[in-house]
Image (cartoon, rainbow, N blue to C red; front, side):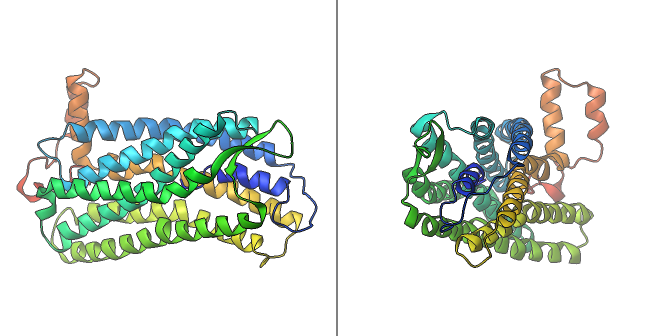
Length: 351
């Protein structure tokens, strides 16, 4: 999420051999093919992200009588993922045209929104893991009943994410490349400071945007799984599967991208041999791993919502009222639902 425009920026970086000393430019014949694949991927992720997260927001907003703290986090997570999804068409046009046609204002705005949505998303994922830890391991429902506290936490998340987005908003501009008509949405930083700027941002993203949230999730979900495993709750196996999928999806989507960017950082720092073959392989890896990372916004609604029985029942009930589904379809999924049972009264409607 954080590096959507970096893919095209890195291409410009490779083609103009900035930061690689006196090495000559390399010609990458795979750029157009890879670019088309990425554009198609953006469109697919945009469609599913827009549809899935809109449904989550709609469903949670109508859960006034059953909404828990996790559901509030989920709604904010859906907002973050939806904002991210809305930026994808701009980047798709950017890559397809190999030219930023939207001007400096939208360059700053779209870049800021993508950075904001990235940090808010990962922070909210960490909040959800802490919330489940408190509810299951500590067996306390205090936070579930203190919605004002939860909203304050969400507000803090958005403020923190916005603060971390300021450097991108300030530095990004629509810049003309090599006295041509081609424009790039790029950091307006002098060449001798570009590598230090990018390395600094990447360190922040690696630490705050991946390793810190991952550590929180692993600790909280690890303790949660241990508690569920020792309990006699009949729903523990389903809960453990959801938790396992949450952590696994986060790692699968974002770990390859972080590793690839780390290798790119080493290349820019001269710690890895700089050859055209290395650049080409790294560019392909950036395309693949970033596209995989971007899919996370479309996967989130599935992991946090559509695998949840109570959420599915609630959504189907809403569809029934709108005449979008039949009672036969609703009854097919309603048996076994514990929507109002005492054992799940305080659990999340979505998890």
